[in-house]
Length: 400
Image (cartoon, rainbow, N blue to C red):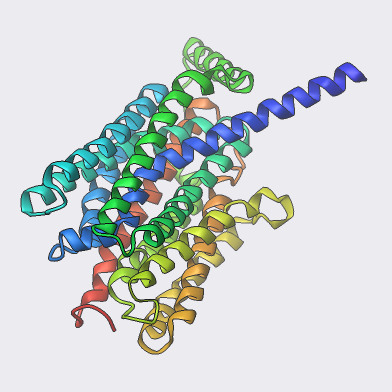
């Protein structure tokens, strides 16, 4: 019994260690882009005429969506490790180049600097598609806790950057070039996180016993499939069997990105919080988004019905009139509460969809392909939301 108990303890510890690594990798997958979003107030100061939060998002999304679509349609589902390393490497050098760009221009801005900034953001889009598609595809074949931990990490990335932004705002608010100092600190932090992710994925993650087990299992299934010359389900068949999950992810992010972050920065007016207002709104969203991704880890709090998930996703479209009338008539307290609820529902429903167990038993290649398809639909929703976000500017110069 003692030996059996010891083995169980070791298995639990190994699984928990892998979950922690997956969570950190999730943070690294979004921290660079969240840094861009979170220091938007600095980019509004440097590039006041170019709508940074909207334009940079619009630059980012076509590259991430185009890259994931190319990967899906080319069927590149068995080279995840290479794709993931490429992605984290681009993130690392991209954030490093943002620091160099700011130091070279001394925060002076200008059209040329803005074009370089847009180019780096486009590279972040390519990196995102490589990492997220491959990680979701790879972890989906492993135990559900791994993919859920990775999704939690995506939310934590936003919460960490928002908390750090509030801290830098408090520290440098009254100092000369305070915004710039805070932005540079952010970029240094992001660069460090991306370097840690490279080390973790290259030297730690593949050597974890539980991960080695799943890698060996996937390789065995792949060899068996080749020997028997059996073909996996096509993307079309996988999509048909999981169309509700794909559409739900699309709708979740189309709604969320039509409001966050552009509406919060440009359409909510001026209130008592002053320059803190947009930062508090973004922090409220990111904090509740991160927290809500933990909720489905409690089994009886997780939505397991695809119909109920769809119903909740459709109900979220009530946020559109709610944000419009809140921005027009209500005070900052109501807007903060509404933004928090937007983040809460976004994170919770994302975790429920991504951890949803399909009825069919897929092999490693099929699970991998399905993961890429779901990420493609999620990123398609993000892109649609970014485009729809521009509709808030119709008939108004800035805010309601």
